[in-house]
Image (cartoon, rainbow, N blue to C red; front, side, top):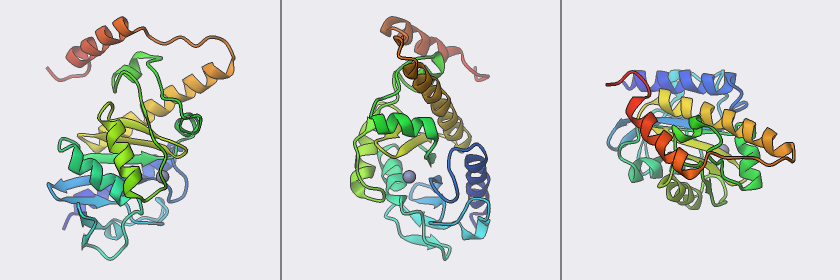
Length: 214
Ligand SMILES: [Zn+2]
């Protein structure tokens, strides 16, 4: 039961690891199975050792419904996002380097390229709270009202989307732009962002025209 969802957690956990967005067993990811059920990465198992049968299925109150392994200690972060944004079906939380640099400086990622605008006008920072707490989950949900990708102060990045593929590509997108932004800031020269009028126009254009959907 739930094989497809468990396999997806294993597949994308490995992708997170191989793309250097996490190390060992850090970060976490989940996928929605039904209105009240998710499959989520287990606590403390390295992604390159993770087997599908080790992936727990929990309800949105954090109770294990299927499986014998404990869910990620960050499961509240995931369940609160699903409760708050019913259209979200996948959540990925990474500790990628440049997103973490911005999160440590506590500066949001502005619209430095149009790829940022594919997500939002800016990638905001959620206020600091300790890992695993409701406070952290609440802070992320608050920031997520502005953008489905959020930097977590002194911690990392979380991306929520309709599909796991989209959540993963958002995390890659934010990390790449965060790298460009950090390198640009490190020159000490003035860093320009796309002005508001162009940003709004680009977002509208991308929303209508980007991709293969008609
Ligand atoms: Zn984390």
